[in-house]
Length: 490
Image (cartoon, rainbow, N blue to C red; front, side, top):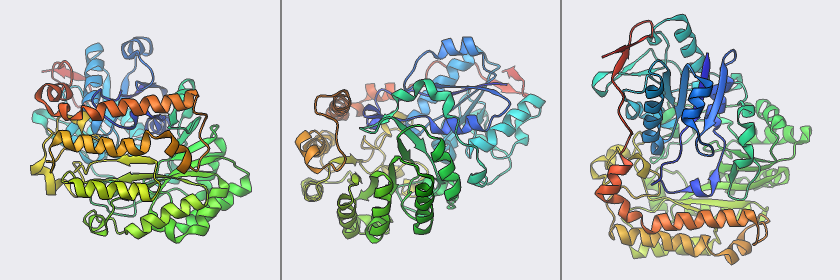
């Protein structure tokens, strides 16, 4: 079968890292790797165009796509475009958000939702389609039904042993790899070594996606893939990579034995970093260049409310350990929408006292599927259908200071740190490119775009923008499939 895997574009009103990073569609490369025997293409609409042209030239039998919460409406638009082109094409949706809130993707243009590991599920789904069997015989699917409901097929584990997964098909994005980067990290490849998480922070649903069970690859499997990656920089996108001392020690030993020289970016918990300085020193020698640390808050009371099981002292110590060993800290902070002047000043003092430059400041967002969703769902101020605004940059809860003031304060906090290039060169451990260079210009231009979006973000809460954000494109005629999989007009 001909399978076209598509990454949808980032919505226009979504604010965030889209302006300073574009990374490869790793989830689609994994799905493609599982489809041996089928002809598979990847279309990345974040860096290329031509959906209709691709449909005409490739003539797929199946179109698969995925997204986070911000891309739900783009996925529906995409599937509607496919169905208008050829209603017989199967449309399949998966990804992180589908794993927790599959009902968000119910649409007349969507045939199948995969809430688990697409790499292992898709081959079974395609086999059922080819053999003329009902897809209801395939475990682990969510099938859209009339009236916006879902019919679930038999349950299955979230995924198999991750060591059994094939390596992602990076060859399918070979023509695009020069376009992928993360801030100053370029050329860059993504890598995943763990699915799920050992912790249960209340604002995050990563641990819930896998039913509370993390799936971790062996050091041997990781090293084998690293040896095949051509890029010099590797972004390990596990939600927490620096968390298991034994595994990291063995992995480091194997990397050194194989003579692999890469520069690594990864996620790590501050308490692990603070208490394992010798391991950070070892990994810095192996090429660890930056760690994304979920600092989250500046008081222990706030961390406790998030069920972070961590302390602000550990946060400060982690920053010191990383800087001591030449590793940049990319700090994540989550201000409450109720912050007033006192809380914002305290946040800035923490940033300034710890010489933080690389920052991601995200207003507390109760994403559907998280533990805190039930706590806040009746206070939401942004419609659930306005998916582009659920980007962890727009505030979706009532603010203590008014929307315009909240966004201005958020922007001022960002600007004092990020737009100060002298500060960047003073506190950044990594050697930055020359001030007059394409890399610097690209990042500065992206930062300016984010600044402009945040400056006027309060207007996105108006009815006109909300209507645009909720748009899902032109409807398609409602159809259903018979048990053999053939579509029948209704």
